[in-house]
Length: 276
Image 1: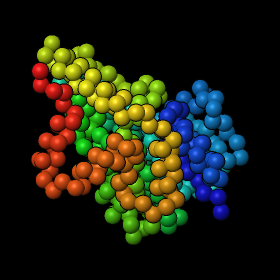
Image 2 (image 1 turned 90 degrees about the vertical axis):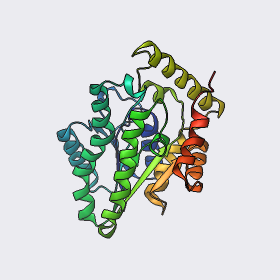
Image 3 (image 1 turned 60 degrees about the vertical axis):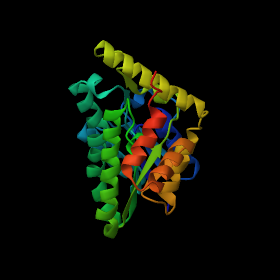
Image 4 (image 1 turned 180 degrees about the vertical axis):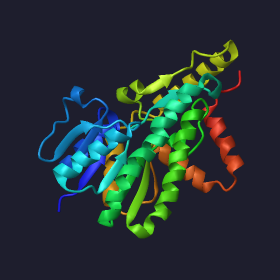
């Protein structure tokens, strides 16, 4: 029986690559996005349904799932990929910006799962894959609010992986490192030029240092993330799955250092610019 995956955030980046990957592997794909009328690469066909889903709009989530069930008969895997980031210190992040980020990155994930889980439970099986970030595994200076939203999803997924184990549903996270693609950069809110002079100067310094680290590590192929998502859907893998040399290295370091404070100091030495 052909399996079906529903993926959010398919208009660009990891979501679009994941949709193409699952389809190429013989799956039915419900590729969702906020503005499907603008999509030209992914096309509705016998094995692909391109439809609207806004993770902050519960009715659109229900409609997309209903459309997928009507076309393909069942759902087997949910990939929560929709999200966005920010470049800002905490003081540069106004409350509306923080709430908007949580509405997408945290509550949006919950909204989709709330609608999808009854269908997976009815099947007695399934898998939910939540795309997070390296910033959800370690706190990153200059990305504290974004890190907090991704930490929330990492913790949520870990709890759900135990909560639903006896009901046959698996939960996984995929945590990409620095994949500096155009699509990724276009989906980041930059607030580094806001705040008072001291905050602005420090924020710019943090951002420049991080950018140098990311570019110094060389370009990473975003297809790696789509492949990891597919692996999580089809193989027995851990709950937490970092992707990319940088994320892998940091996750291994995290698991090898017994003292969390010592780990924070190691991270600070890497991600904070040298004191002049």
